[in-house]
Length: 271
Image (tube, rainbow, N blue to C red; front, side, top):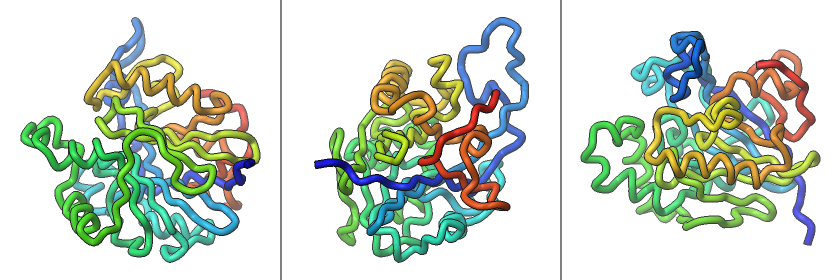
């Protein structure tokens, strides 16, 4: 049976224009200025079909963003409104991992089923959180909300690869976190992979140079290769934080600088 086609949107909710290269890549080539500017954007992604909407990640609120040194631009709900989607339209939320900038505001989508890898929630609520380094990217109020959702019967656990709705699948890759998963979506231009933080920037992918926050370098590199196999080409891979996404893909509408249509053909833009 042929997979249905979906429209896919990258929706920016935050930014950090003060970010530096040494914060985003590990290995610096000779002559590469490690302190050079390398801004970061923060996204959620909407997968829109004829009869359903899947939200990939739920972002973070202004208090959490500010406390961690980033700029909150708008709530993810407002970003969804730009493409004509309301909270009640979202039937499923796929959370790629539980870091603070991807797993907040789940209570804004009370009717949605929440999809997470077993390994991710086990890591974020288990013995590893005894380490200040390992728990640094997680947010206690967000995890409390997730535990409430779990006890309310809203959480669907996955172990490995799985289909969430017809055609849309999650794929466990690890590396950045133990339960990191990416999302594969059939669109009019082929298979698009929402890599989230399996690939923070295009450069992490092209140089096989990991983002510095990770639990396994070996798994991170293998995740890059898995993402490449799942996508229908390099321009079908969507990184989690690269401002180039909004430059490479068409705007949803004039004036909507923070919303890009990933199911449409990208333009060639130099880094």
